[in-house]
Length: 361
Image 1 (cartoon, rainbow, N blue to C red):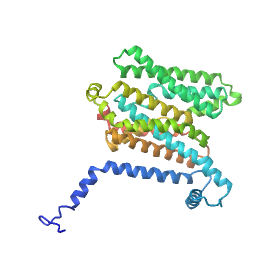
Image 2: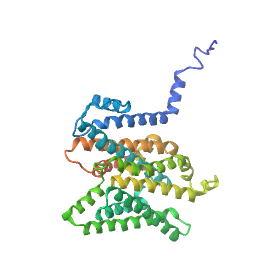
Image 3: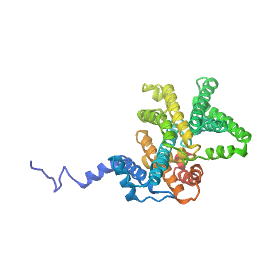
């Protein structure tokens, strides 16, 4: 077939058309490269740590495991790769994704870019549950379950108070105020448990370490227990993310388009609470991720939640895994990851405020 040309140009192929296509779809390419980066980082993270494993040995171990070849590496290497680093890496990716997607969702619900996942008291309630489990010397599964139950309970109480006090009006403002009250209440209970704990049997130190956030003691069983509620909550939020664009314009506009705003808000709050409580249950309090990552993603990808939600999830996943890799490599002792995210989060959030000060303030 003969291709006609006009003014010496091919109408079906031009540099301008290619550049225009790339510019129009650049956010999709960013997400694609971010996903590839997360996968590469997952593999490379196995080589970080005090016990050195070369990338070549690591690739052979994965190859042998996948195709069922005979184990030729030492039992010590097998223990480090599959029983120490694998659950820690998966947990870092899951917790980072969960905190980022929770922060993005809450910022959409409350129409405020300064909102964090713990605004309704989920983190405080889950912290109290974990501290209670440690105080009564539950096993790790019991600690996770109590953390999860009290995280859900805290937000349930917050929501009930907002419904009673707000009486159907100013629901967002009353939710935030009630969440602050519940968070302070459970924070006081955590302090009480720390005070009552016997320092002789290391209970105070164990509770304090949990509250600072850490992934070093996790096993695959611990990760699997929290994996199900995390994945269920993430899937629901991803399926409903396009509705976040609608409710961001206001409740009246959303209702005019046939969206049940009250039901949607309840479902999203329940899912974010569920995944936040699950993350606290396995990792303790890891701050700033749910605040800075959504704002960084918004700078790069814009405010369309159809793109922003998966972008925040991938960015949070990579961010927390990078921080954990740095902790395992730089420090000779196992520093709680929550301390490192706080040290990084402050300066990064200051940069975000300077970058977006006209839109935020």
